[in-house]
Length: 328
Ligand code: NAX
Image 1: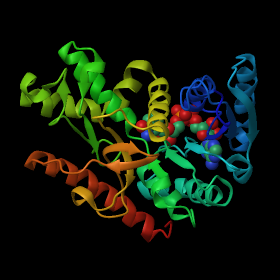
Image 2: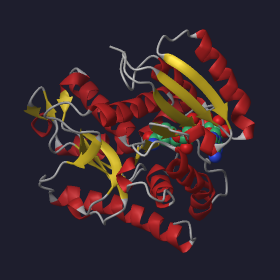
Image 3: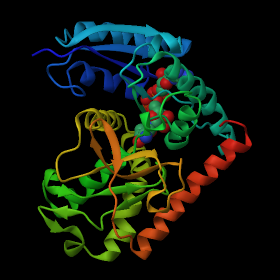
Image 4: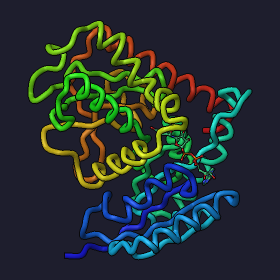
């Protein structure tokens, strides 16, 4: 039976990840095969033609679930009654740019977008920040979204989560579907902690199958620096895998995580696991009734504690800088 139409806004839709996202969303990858979708593509004037071109191609795809596509450079128009927003468009770091400059340039994007989401989107909207620095951009967007609960905002660490599962599966020559129980903690940056202390491979503890040296010296840095590896091998940044992860994140958020398992997402901390309240940090999460819930009760060993603390310290530093610059 056909469901009500869902409206999804994609910012930076004229860019690379945007292009990879649109066709999968139009074919039902987020809301499933019975839910029609309307797409709103938000771009800056320089990106409008690229987004318009993608919109033409969407028509040419003759997707039976696709009700409409609108391209705009006006945030309120783009977010109007949106059920979900994928905030992909961001200001990249350019040569000579300090971290404070990067935070400031992105706050000028994510602050106003947060405010426009609060004014114009559905009160039940789900927001996924992909554009970097994703965690702090989500913090800034939520800080400007007066009246919307904080838990409507999240940042994507699902790509890191998927990378961790994929790399583990390849190393053990196991199907990735057999790999479970991975967690990404902290920031979507090189300080992130891909934690496999509770990972299982076909029900067996991964730590029994792997040696500690491989986990610490090879696996963890490889996952954390996978983005750089992709750039080196492919000649440009991750696009298909990033779009796929954004779809996984949003799909699980609206549809729920599979029974008995969890995934990773960066969400506003409630103080769990010693992560200061309000920081948008990656946790083990389940989606229940359309809301992310942190999976509680994991014992954290000393090595993991150090790694989580290091990444959280980086997030606190970003928050302090954003505060000092008056961005939140
Ligand atoms: P592109 O440069 O191809 O596309 C970005 C698009 O955003 C451009 O078309 C640009 O015109 C648009 N844009 C800029 N400012 C905008 C604004 N204020 N409103 C609307 N649109 C705006 O980059 P792409 O490869 O698509 O990457 C997009 C973002 O994803 C980057 O910030 C990148 O760092 C980030 N990533 C995040 C990942 C994650 O795991 N969280 C992984 C992949 C990716 O690196």
